[in-house]
Length: 318
Image 1 (spheres, rainbow, N blue to C red):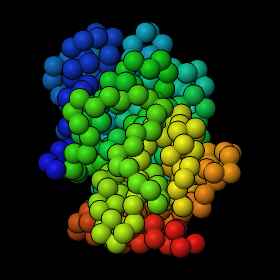
Image 2 (image 1 turned 180 degrees about the vertical axis):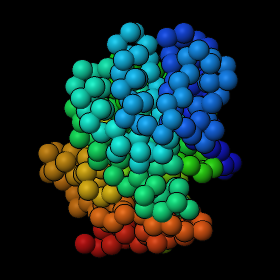
Image 3 (image 1 turned 135 degrees about the horizontal axis):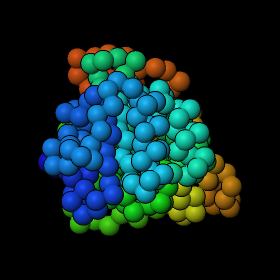
Image 4 (image 1 turned 90 degrees about the vertical axis):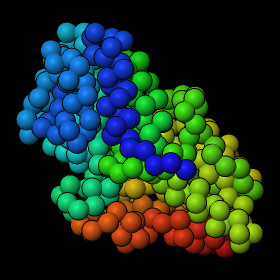
């Protein structure tokens, strides 16, 4: 598998959309080189707004541009860090974007623990829960470079507010370049007979690797990619759970209010066959911390393939 960068995918997709649609504008909070939104700015300077380190102002201006008929891609890592894109301007997102259902697309980069060197202040463990709770907001978490490009294009076609979170680092490609993407639908990445693993973001790759470890021990694991956190495909989740001995959810975010919560809400509302034991993996009610390498944090927070495989076996035993 080749490694490719989701931030670059965002920048490239935004540039392509800018060439196709003159109503698309981009805003960023002083991090255009990091988020790759400067690709758009170089090509369309008249539609590119540098807002400085002022995410609340950025969202307010994006809302104003949306009211004039523009599609405002406000990046506070997708022109800023995900932790700042979701946290600093929360009131503006709620009141000026979500309530009036404006066509603003909020892009958060360096999501989860991927900004490993900057520590807890810069690591977004809570952004999925924050965005998921907002009525009218759609929430996306791509697995790789190609899925990021497809989701950015889908966001441009959706009428209303959207949030996407992307990883900071180069990560393995796990989806095909021409694979279809349908917002609000799950995608099975690997078949299995014993347990289903629901994963999102970079954790899809980690879960696929975990499935290989499990296979070597005689455990057949199904892996499902949840790129759309909201609206959540509840019936799809129930269908994937039927016939399984147990389920595991894996996210690079807090276990409270995120993917794990969405899966459990779906399964407990289903029929008896889909109400299976589910263990939630993620960041266990902690903030992040700094490290010299990304892998060190994945080990610390027990989000490696070996950890996922271990949890899957525990779920089956229970």
